[in-house]
Length: 352
Image (cartoon, rainbow, N blue to C red):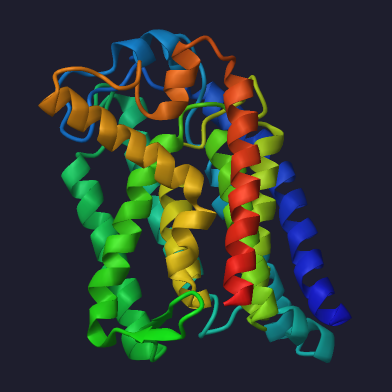
Protein backbone atom coordinates (compact mmCIF):
# COMPACT_ATOMS: atom_id res chain seq x y z
CA UNK A 1 0.00 0.00 0.00
CA UNK A 2 2.75 2.47 0.96
CA UNK A 3 4.63 1.80 -2.27
CA UNK A 4 1.47 2.41 -4.29
CA UNK A 5 0.89 5.71 -2.49
CA UNK A 6 4.47 6.76 -3.22
CA UNK A 7 4.02 5.69 -6.84
CA UNK A 8 1.21 8.24 -7.06
CA UNK A 9 2.73 11.00 -4.94
CA UNK A 10 6.20 11.19 -6.52
CA UNK A 11 5.03 11.57 -10.18
CA UNK A 12 2.33 13.95 -8.93
CA UNK A 13 4.79 16.33 -7.26
CA UNK A 14 7.26 15.91 -10.15
CA UNK A 15 4.59 16.95 -12.67
CA UNK A 16 3.61 20.00 -10.62
CA UNK A 17 7.17 21.29 -10.55
CA UNK A 18 7.66 20.54 -14.25
CA UNK A 19 4.55 22.60 -14.98
CA UNK A 20 5.74 25.46 -12.76
CA UNK A 21 9.21 25.34 -14.40
CA UNK A 22 8.06 25.49 -18.02
CA UNK A 23 5.53 28.29 -17.45
CA UNK A 24 8.00 31.23 -17.62
CA UNK A 25 9.25 29.96 -21.00
CA UNK A 26 5.71 29.59 -22.34
CA UNK A 27 4.62 32.92 -20.89
CA UNK A 28 7.52 34.77 -22.51
CA UNK A 29 6.69 33.22 -25.89
CA UNK A 30 2.95 33.88 -25.70
CA UNK A 31 3.32 37.54 -24.74
CA UNK A 32 6.23 38.19 -27.09
CA UNK A 33 4.22 36.95 -30.07
CA UNK A 34 0.88 38.35 -28.81
CA UNK A 35 -0.89 34.99 -28.91
CA UNK A 36 -4.34 36.30 -28.12
CA UNK A 37 -7.48 37.04 -30.10
CA UNK A 38 -7.13 40.02 -32.38
CA UNK A 39 -10.87 40.67 -32.12
CA UNK A 40 -12.84 40.26 -28.90
CA UNK A 41 -16.04 38.28 -28.46
CA UNK A 42 -17.53 35.11 -29.78
CA UNK A 43 -20.26 34.24 -32.19
CA UNK A 44 -23.44 32.33 -31.60
CA UNK A 45 -23.38 28.67 -30.74
CA UNK A 46 -25.58 25.59 -30.75
CA UNK A 47 -27.59 26.91 -33.65
CA UNK A 48 -28.30 30.27 -32.08
CA UNK A 49 -28.07 33.07 -34.69
CA UNK A 50 -28.28 36.09 -32.40
CA UNK A 51 -24.78 36.00 -30.96
CA UNK A 52 -23.69 36.89 -27.43
CA UNK A 53 -23.55 40.69 -27.06
CA UNK A 54 -23.63 40.63 -23.24
CA UNK A 55 -20.72 38.19 -23.08
CA UNK A 56 -18.81 40.22 -25.62
CA UNK A 57 -19.27 43.36 -23.54
CA UNK A 58 -18.19 41.61 -20.31
CA UNK A 59 -15.02 40.17 -21.81
CA UNK A 60 -14.04 42.57 -24.58
CA UNK A 61 -10.89 43.85 -22.86
CA UNK A 62 -9.47 40.60 -21.44
CA UNK A 63 -9.86 38.57 -24.62
CA UNK A 64 -7.61 40.83 -26.64
CA UNK A 65 -4.86 41.13 -24.03
CA UNK A 66 -4.66 37.69 -22.43
CA UNK A 67 -2.86 34.94 -24.36
CA UNK A 68 -4.45 31.63 -25.20
CA UNK A 69 -2.83 28.16 -25.19
CA UNK A 70 -2.15 27.99 -21.44
CA UNK A 71 -3.33 24.37 -21.60
CA UNK A 72 0.09 23.52 -23.05
CA UNK A 73 1.38 23.55 -19.46
CA UNK A 74 -0.95 20.69 -18.56
CA UNK A 75 -0.32 18.21 -21.35
CA UNK A 76 3.37 18.96 -21.80
CA UNK A 77 4.07 18.45 -18.09
CA UNK A 78 2.08 15.19 -18.15
CA UNK A 79 3.95 14.02 -21.26
CA UNK A 80 7.35 14.87 -19.77
CA UNK A 81 6.55 13.03 -16.54
CA UNK A 82 5.26 9.98 -18.41
CA UNK A 83 8.39 9.80 -20.58
CA UNK A 84 10.79 10.37 -17.67
CA UNK A 85 9.37 7.60 -15.50
CA UNK A 86 9.09 5.26 -18.49
CA UNK A 87 12.72 5.96 -19.47
CA UNK A 88 13.94 5.31 -15.92
CA UNK A 89 12.24 1.93 -15.92
CA UNK A 90 13.40 1.07 -19.45
CA UNK A 91 17.05 2.15 -19.30
CA UNK A 92 17.63 1.41 -15.60
CA UNK A 93 15.46 -1.66 -14.98
CA UNK A 94 15.70 -1.97 -11.22
CA UNK A 95 12.83 -3.05 -8.98
CA UNK A 96 12.11 0.52 -7.89
CA UNK A 97 12.34 2.19 -11.31
CA UNK A 98 10.11 -0.39 -13.00
CA UNK A 99 7.62 -0.07 -10.16
CA UNK A 100 7.34 3.69 -10.69
CA UNK A 101 6.85 3.34 -14.47
CA UNK A 102 3.09 3.84 -14.85
CA UNK A 103 2.94 3.38 -18.63
CA UNK A 104 0.89 0.23 -19.29
CA UNK A 105 -1.01 -1.05 -22.32
CA UNK A 106 -4.22 -1.77 -20.45
CA UNK A 107 -4.45 1.39 -18.35
CA UNK A 108 -2.49 4.39 -19.63
CA UNK A 109 -1.53 4.04 -23.30
CA UNK A 110 -4.97 5.06 -24.57
CA UNK A 111 -5.59 8.03 -22.22
CA UNK A 112 -2.10 9.40 -22.90
CA UNK A 113 -2.59 9.04 -26.66
CA UNK A 114 -5.97 10.75 -26.36
CA UNK A 115 -4.59 13.61 -24.26
CA UNK A 116 -1.70 14.37 -26.61
CA UNK A 117 -3.54 13.92 -29.92
CA UNK A 118 -6.60 15.95 -28.85
CA UNK A 119 -4.42 18.65 -27.30
CA UNK A 120 -2.39 19.01 -30.51
CA UNK A 121 -5.60 19.37 -32.50
CA UNK A 122 -6.77 21.98 -30.01
CA UNK A 123 -3.42 23.74 -30.43
CA UNK A 124 -4.03 24.00 -34.18
CA UNK A 125 -7.43 25.51 -33.46
CA UNK A 126 -5.86 28.03 -31.08
CA UNK A 127 -3.25 29.02 -33.64
CA UNK A 128 -6.01 29.66 -36.16
CA UNK A 129 -7.90 31.69 -33.57
CA UNK A 130 -5.02 33.99 -32.64
CA UNK A 131 -4.22 34.49 -36.31
CA UNK A 132 -7.83 35.48 -37.02
CA UNK A 133 -8.26 32.69 -39.54
CA UNK A 134 -11.14 30.24 -39.62
CA UNK A 135 -14.86 30.52 -39.12
CA UNK A 136 -15.22 31.81 -35.56
CA UNK A 137 -15.89 35.46 -34.91
CA UNK A 138 -12.17 35.76 -34.28
CA UNK A 139 -10.91 32.68 -36.10
CA UNK A 140 -10.62 28.95 -35.46
CA UNK A 141 -11.72 25.61 -36.89
CA UNK A 142 -15.29 25.16 -38.11
CA UNK A 143 -17.47 23.41 -35.55
CA UNK A 144 -18.19 20.55 -37.98
CA UNK A 145 -14.49 19.81 -38.33
CA UNK A 146 -13.96 19.80 -34.57
CA UNK A 147 -16.93 17.50 -34.08
CA UNK A 148 -15.56 15.22 -36.78
CA UNK A 149 -12.13 15.12 -35.14
CA UNK A 150 -13.61 14.34 -31.72
CA UNK A 151 -15.77 11.61 -33.30
CA UNK A 152 -12.67 10.10 -34.91
CA UNK A 153 -10.80 10.08 -31.60
CA UNK A 154 -13.87 8.49 -30.02
CA UNK A 155 -14.00 5.86 -32.76
CA UNK A 156 -10.35 4.94 -32.19
CA UNK A 157 -10.89 4.84 -28.44
CA UNK A 158 -14.04 2.73 -28.67
CA UNK A 159 -12.35 0.32 -31.08
CA UNK A 160 -9.34 0.01 -28.75
CA UNK A 161 -11.61 -0.82 -25.83
CA UNK A 162 -13.58 -3.40 -27.76
CA UNK A 163 -10.85 -5.02 -29.88
CA UNK A 164 -7.64 -4.57 -27.89
CA UNK A 165 -8.78 -4.49 -24.28
CA UNK A 166 -11.78 -6.80 -24.69
CA UNK A 167 -14.08 -4.35 -22.89
CA UNK A 168 -17.71 -4.53 -24.00
CA UNK A 169 -19.67 -3.76 -20.83
CA UNK A 170 -20.16 -0.92 -18.37
CA UNK A 171 -21.05 -0.92 -14.69
CA UNK A 172 -24.63 -0.17 -13.67
CA UNK A 173 -24.58 1.42 -10.20
CA UNK A 174 -25.89 -1.10 -7.65
CA UNK A 175 -27.06 -3.43 -10.45
CA UNK A 176 -24.07 -5.31 -11.86
CA UNK A 177 -22.89 -4.76 -15.43
CA UNK A 178 -24.52 -4.06 -18.78
CA UNK A 179 -23.13 -6.06 -21.67
CA UNK A 180 -23.17 -3.84 -24.77
CA UNK A 181 -21.06 -5.82 -27.23
CA UNK A 182 -19.91 -3.82 -30.23
CA UNK A 183 -22.42 -1.07 -29.36
CA UNK A 184 -19.89 0.14 -26.82
CA UNK A 185 -18.06 1.83 -29.73
CA UNK A 186 -20.87 4.24 -30.76
CA UNK A 187 -21.70 4.76 -27.08
CA UNK A 188 -18.09 5.74 -26.46
CA UNK A 189 -18.26 8.28 -29.30
CA UNK A 190 -21.51 9.80 -27.96
CA UNK A 191 -20.08 10.23 -24.46
CA UNK A 192 -16.95 11.87 -25.83
CA UNK A 193 -19.00 14.28 -27.94
CA UNK A 194 -21.17 15.11 -24.94
CA UNK A 195 -18.14 15.93 -22.80
CA UNK A 196 -16.58 17.92 -25.63
CA UNK A 197 -19.71 20.09 -25.79
CA UNK A 198 -19.19 20.90 -22.11
CA UNK A 199 -16.12 22.94 -23.08
CA UNK A 200 -18.44 25.96 -23.02
CA UNK A 201 -17.62 26.09 -19.30
CA UNK A 202 -14.34 27.78 -20.22
CA UNK A 203 -14.29 31.58 -20.18
CA UNK A 204 -13.68 32.66 -16.56
CA UNK A 205 -10.26 32.64 -14.93
CA UNK A 206 -9.60 29.25 -13.29
CA UNK A 207 -13.12 27.88 -13.78
CA UNK A 208 -12.51 24.94 -16.13
CA UNK A 209 -9.18 24.01 -14.57
CA UNK A 210 -10.59 23.81 -11.06
CA UNK A 211 -13.58 21.61 -11.84
CA UNK A 212 -11.49 19.38 -14.11
CA UNK A 213 -8.97 18.81 -11.31
CA UNK A 214 -11.73 17.51 -9.03
CA UNK A 215 -13.10 15.20 -11.71
CA UNK A 216 -9.77 13.58 -12.48
CA UNK A 217 -9.03 13.32 -8.76
CA UNK A 218 -12.35 11.50 -8.23
CA UNK A 219 -11.68 9.00 -11.00
CA UNK A 220 -8.11 8.62 -9.76
CA UNK A 221 -9.53 7.63 -6.38
CA UNK A 222 -11.93 5.16 -7.99
CA UNK A 223 -9.07 3.64 -9.99
CA UNK A 224 -6.89 3.35 -6.88
CA UNK A 225 -9.51 1.43 -4.91
CA UNK A 226 -10.08 -0.83 -7.93
CA UNK A 227 -6.33 -1.56 -7.93
CA UNK A 228 -5.84 0.22 -11.27
CA UNK A 229 -2.74 1.86 -9.87
CA UNK A 230 -1.23 2.98 -13.19
CA UNK A 231 -4.47 4.71 -14.16
CA UNK A 232 -4.65 6.31 -10.73
CA UNK A 233 -1.12 7.69 -11.19
CA UNK A 234 -2.06 9.03 -14.62
CA UNK A 235 -5.08 10.85 -13.17
CA UNK A 236 -2.86 12.25 -10.42
CA UNK A 237 -0.30 13.69 -12.85
CA UNK A 238 -3.09 15.32 -14.85
CA UNK A 239 -4.35 16.91 -11.63
CA UNK A 240 -0.80 18.12 -10.91
CA UNK A 241 -0.53 19.62 -14.39
CA UNK A 242 -3.84 21.42 -13.88
CA UNK A 243 -2.69 22.73 -10.48
CA UNK A 244 0.48 24.10 -12.08
CA UNK A 245 -1.72 25.82 -14.65
CA UNK A 246 -4.03 27.19 -11.95
CA UNK A 247 -1.07 28.63 -10.04
CA UNK A 248 -0.79 31.21 -12.82
CA UNK A 249 -4.48 31.31 -13.73
CA UNK A 250 -5.79 32.72 -10.45
CA UNK A 251 -7.38 36.10 -11.29
CA UNK A 252 -6.07 37.98 -13.07
CA UNK A 253 -5.20 35.09 -15.36
CA UNK A 254 -1.81 35.07 -17.04
CA UNK A 255 -3.30 33.06 -19.92
CA UNK A 256 -6.38 31.07 -20.94
CA UNK A 257 -6.44 27.29 -21.12
CA UNK A 258 -8.32 27.47 -24.45
CA UNK A 259 -8.85 24.58 -26.89
CA UNK A 260 -5.46 22.92 -26.46
CA UNK A 261 -6.33 22.31 -22.82
CA UNK A 262 -10.09 21.89 -22.99
CA UNK A 263 -10.14 19.45 -25.89
CA UNK A 264 -7.43 17.26 -24.41
CA UNK A 265 -8.97 17.14 -20.94
CA UNK A 266 -12.59 16.45 -21.93
CA UNK A 267 -11.70 13.63 -24.34
CA UNK A 268 -9.25 12.09 -21.86
CA UNK A 269 -11.85 12.20 -19.08
CA UNK A 270 -14.10 10.09 -21.31
CA UNK A 271 -11.38 7.46 -21.69
CA UNK A 272 -10.64 7.43 -17.96
CA UNK A 273 -14.32 7.01 -17.11
CA UNK A 274 -14.61 3.98 -19.41
CA UNK A 275 -11.38 2.48 -18.11
CA UNK A 276 -12.75 2.48 -14.56
CA UNK A 277 -16.01 0.96 -15.83
CA UNK A 278 -18.01 3.72 -14.13
CA UNK A 279 -18.98 5.88 -17.07
CA UNK A 280 -22.60 6.11 -15.85
CA UNK A 281 -21.33 7.96 -12.76
CA UNK A 282 -19.87 10.59 -15.08
CA UNK A 283 -22.95 12.90 -15.05
CA UNK A 284 -22.56 13.16 -11.27
CA UNK A 285 -18.79 13.60 -11.10
CA UNK A 286 -18.93 15.99 -14.06
CA UNK A 287 -22.08 17.76 -12.85
CA UNK A 288 -20.66 21.30 -13.38
CA UNK A 289 -20.01 20.41 -17.02
CA UNK A 290 -23.44 18.87 -17.39
CA UNK A 291 -25.36 21.80 -15.93
CA UNK A 292 -23.35 24.29 -17.98
CA UNK A 293 -24.11 22.52 -21.25
CA UNK A 294 -27.75 22.11 -20.23
CA UNK A 295 -28.06 25.86 -19.62
CA UNK A 296 -26.86 26.50 -23.17
CA UNK A 297 -29.42 24.05 -24.57
CA UNK A 298 -32.21 25.58 -22.49
CA UNK A 299 -31.30 29.10 -23.61
CA UNK A 300 -31.19 28.27 -27.31
CA UNK A 301 -34.40 26.21 -27.17
CA UNK A 302 -36.27 28.93 -25.28
CA UNK A 303 -35.19 31.63 -27.76
CA UNK A 304 -36.19 29.45 -30.69
CA UNK A 305 -39.57 28.18 -29.46
CA UNK A 306 -40.67 30.86 -26.93
CA UNK A 307 -38.97 33.91 -28.41
CA UNK A 308 -37.41 34.86 -25.09
CA UNK A 309 -34.32 34.07 -23.04
CA UNK A 310 -34.21 32.16 -19.75
CA UNK A 311 -30.80 33.53 -18.74
CA UNK A 312 -29.31 36.96 -19.33
CA UNK A 313 -26.52 35.17 -21.16
CA UNK A 314 -25.61 31.51 -21.49
CA UNK A 315 -23.83 29.40 -20.36
CA UNK A 316 -25.08 29.92 -16.84
CA UNK A 317 -21.77 31.04 -15.31
CA UNK A 318 -21.87 34.11 -17.57
CA UNK A 319 -25.46 34.72 -16.43
CA UNK A 320 -24.15 35.20 -12.90
CA UNK A 321 -21.47 37.55 -14.22
CA UNK A 322 -24.16 39.57 -15.97
CA UNK A 323 -26.06 39.77 -12.65
CA UNK A 324 -23.02 41.50 -11.19
CA UNK A 325 -21.23 38.63 -9.47
CA UNK A 326 -17.43 39.03 -9.53
CA UNK A 327 -15.81 36.35 -11.66
CA UNK A 328 -13.92 34.93 -8.67
CA UNK A 329 -17.21 34.37 -6.81
CA UNK A 330 -18.60 32.39 -9.77
CA UNK A 331 -15.39 30.35 -9.95
CA UNK A 332 -15.21 29.59 -6.22
CA UNK A 333 -18.83 28.45 -6.07
CA UNK A 334 -18.36 26.26 -9.14
CA UNK A 335 -15.34 24.73 -7.43
CA UNK A 336 -17.36 24.03 -4.28
CA UNK A 337 -20.14 22.39 -6.29
CA UNK A 338 -17.50 20.44 -8.21
CA UNK A 339 -15.94 19.06 -5.02
CA UNK A 340 -19.32 18.04 -3.58
CA UNK A 341 -20.45 16.15 -6.69
CA UNK A 342 -17.03 14.60 -7.31
CA UNK A 343 -17.08 13.13 -3.80
CA UNK A 344 -20.67 11.94 -4.19
CA UNK A 345 -19.85 10.28 -7.50
CA UNK A 346 -16.73 8.60 -6.15
CA UNK A 347 -18.61 7.23 -3.14
CA UNK A 348 -21.41 5.88 -5.36
CA UNK A 349 -18.86 4.18 -7.63
CA UNK A 350 -17.04 2.57 -4.70
CA UNK A 351 -20.25 1.39 -3.03
CA UNK A 352 -21.79 -0.10 -6.18
